[in-house]
Image (cartoon, rainbow over all chains, first blue to last red):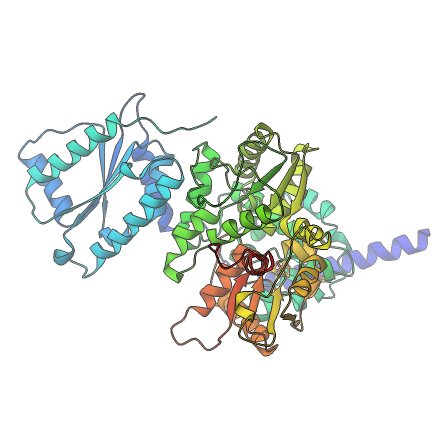
Length: 186
Length: 394
Ligand code: SF4
Ligand code: SF4
């Protein structure tokens, strides 16, 4: 390249940059794709599923109606269940996605119990039946991923009493505790 | 974070602001907010944060049309990939499609969860534990579960592939512990995830003593052929697409193709081919499939106006960002395929099939055309060509 050409190229570059800058200011609209509200649910799942060594961490996704109220009542009447169980409340069981369940396993959970209301009692018309399909799908995926379908369970509730809730959580935890651990390679 | 390296590597400084990229881009056609040229300009100004925080960074389909057409050899496609890696580090990411389930699956696999995913194999298929040929299935078993909502089964492709190989005298290794090839992590900026998945797969393949890996998925084919080689150097095995293997076998007379059952009722079955971006523009493979299709008796191949390296992307990629805009791209492509007069749209990529089927799934379907994977069509033809057809199961 001749020296003359070089200079002209540089000048051209400078003006081009100026035009670019001007255009850019006009065009710059703030559009952020920062992790949205959805991410906060994910973070909650991650921190809840973290476990001390050797513990059988059970995550319970509980609908905010019957199951959650039942869990509260269990506390009120002083029913005991394992401290390895973590309850995460969903506004409705219909909010559950396979991704939430799988992420719980990714973060260290040994089992995931989904606690929904009985379909006919669902406060959001069809939330519970949507949840049923979601859980069925998730169980299939868990099988393919080597986790095992038996580590994902759906239980439905029709009462606000604490006993049935504690019973299903405890029996699920014991069953999961007896399973052969799934393989996580390094 | 600075983007100087990206400017150098993608030769963005060469940009002459011609706008060919934006004019060629399928996304820009329907979404005026998206412009590769504007992105290149921003890149040259060094406004990194502005690029990272731009929602449109995740709208690119990474279809490589722009890079192929750019007169100044700016590799915008590669820039998107590199910028996404940095954007992710800065805390930005795209919106997952399907409520993130496919991302979760890939994440678990990258974490080391060992899949047991060969549930699609049936007794009639001959496979091996070790051997010369390894059939890399990819994510098909998971698609079966995730896409029940559009009533689409993808493992039929895998079964057809193994059956075809068997008919051609190949007994491939199929492993239930195979993981995702890492394509979607690679293109959506999760480089660590990609490397982990790739390392797991390479270990698995080397354990099988395979000297050749056969794929039916163009994305996996491209990953193994380019990204794996770029990251891990020589692989120690050959990477081929199933259509290459079959074409050779058909030419040598080792595999006979007959009229596929869908062509029995008619004079000729008109088909048109959707080129996959990874196959056509990225690997430069457009003719092998066409040759194979022409070798099937009773099948006539008609081309869409935009074909081969000019083919339009199926409209969605990496399980990130699926909006009305993507749907529009798909519907336009479907209309283009219908206008050829073809009865069957043949896809060469399982994801093209999923995306286009999804766009067709609306209850008041405006477009009617059947969609089938090339592997399934070939299997159909081979069953009827081997003389032993009829009795065998599809
Ligand atoms: S096609 Fe190439 S030279 Fe033209 S505007 Fe796009 S990046 Fe710049
Ligand atoms: S890679 Fe495809 S979608 Fe992305 S900017 Fe280029 S042409 Fe548009």
